Image (tube, rainbow, N blue to C red):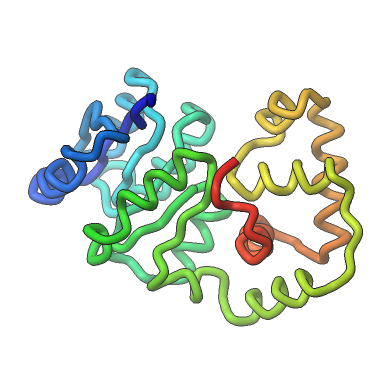
Length: 217
């Protein structure tokens, strides 16, 4: 079995040491590098062909939000798993819109981190159970749950496109995976979102979670 290649990005050496101790005995992961600032994290992700970056939001120089945004274009095959003390819904909504694949609270790391890594490495989405409810918001939860219960006819191709989009794949990546044109992907995605009454990626993720689409490919 190929091990998941991980870069740790946190400006606190004690946190990095703790994460290494937590993960070192797991046969499914390999820590290939660590960084104490945002620019170094981006450099390592590109150089080391990283599968998953475990990212703190409070990084010096370039904060975690900017790192996640830049990484999406620079190293699209690297999934971002945020590990943070922040429980603010606005932070989480913003990160989901940027394509982050997972969010775990630091206080939950010992119980949740390995499960989260496996989920995002497999192409899924992982949200810490402590914040999953507030991640999207009550009003959005009600909206998406209502949409799930509606009789909306999506084609198999529309479902494939939406599932990959919810998991964080760009239109170009979806095009490559499904062997269809980028414009065709955009058409399927737009049409399916309109059918479901969804406007943002955060809404799409909530819908996908309720449908059980995000446990991996």
